[in-house]
Image (cartoon, rainbow, N blue to C red; front, top):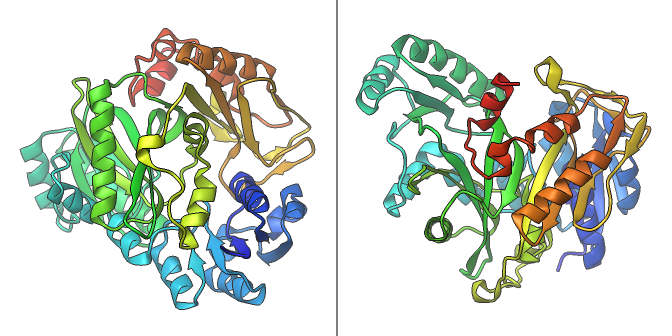
Length: 448
């Protein structure tokens, strides 16, 4: 087992990893930017090192500085959290070359699954359904138009080298396709340093379903059930829940088997998520694989009883998975709301600034993952999420009751947040009844 781990991230996820390591008896080194100096969670690490200015490019994405810090502080491994360098195969490869364990899949596997076009090919080879689309990056706009006519509009343009909603555009006709291709390529290049894009058929009124997998270095792969991530805005997830209230048991079983099969086919190790679109008839189609820890991992932990971060660390250290599929039990329902520093009344404009009052909810069935507090200043340099509210109940109805109470108790002043927005959204009969898809939020906002 490792004796010392560097946490190459910030905020809530850095705190999450630091806490897991503390429980395992592992020392931690936290890195931070000048913009995060003084954050309280840094005090919980055994060591904290400033790695640059507030700009993420000069700090949390500064690979030479992070590697130098890892070497100077004599760590065994680096945990990348999510975002930033968590899916950068070049960073994983540098860690390997520096004899520092990257807590995640091998760089060669990340390279395969990180390229969405190649991932589609691998899924097809394993007989996992994929949506009609391009088999290689789009290099000629005329060929893209020809393919779009063949598979039918609307089509989605996607960045081949990344995700998270960046480099994604929907085209409803030839004119918009030609215009959107240029925009998507530009955005993909800025976000991922790779302008490659591909197109695929848009599946209307679908659910976004993802399956959590865990794998060790000995060929053991398990799944921890699925999460429904259909409540999203501009491809950014807002609410996630497990299990999904809108798929059958047979579909649930089929997507789980497909996810495990895909992970085995590439010799995956660590925690990962295989994402699918599921139509109203239960047909499912592979989207992508995220080779990292997901923001929404806590809801899976709550219903499965498995600490995913600890399993990541154990597997990376060479240990066998501590779980067996046949012994896992998934109990109850868990729902997560991403509390963002945004103003829903002003097109969800980010709302950085000082939090003057932070009164979190409490009581049975509530878990709150956050690094903020009264007096904390939300920086404009990073993601707007300030907390993850996780609510649990034996049934979905119970979980919604806990969530409703938790949101009514939650008080954050000094900045705008999405708390009030969620209070309204969960009362909508479509959401309350579990009858929603990836277009639910835009329709909800259109009728507001």
